[in-house]
Amino acid sequence: MHIYKTKGVCSSEIHFDVEDNIIKKVDFLGGCPGNTLGVSKLIEGMSVDDAITRLKGIDCRGKGTSCPDQLSKALEELKHNA
Image: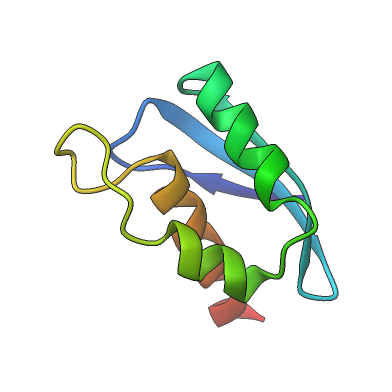
């Protein structure tokens, strides 16, 4: 289980599992429950690269980031440290 501390969004952490470059499980702590659960269910089974491409740059209310964007940052960090 990987843990990523978010910045600039309502959720405080993202917990996620990746196996062989495939996202297996994602849980957001905090944030908008319906939206974060929806994002989690949509990307489970997706490759890390596809998820980064789809989620990177999504903005929430002019914050310059969002929970999905923070997940892309978490996945990029994981790739960089691998």
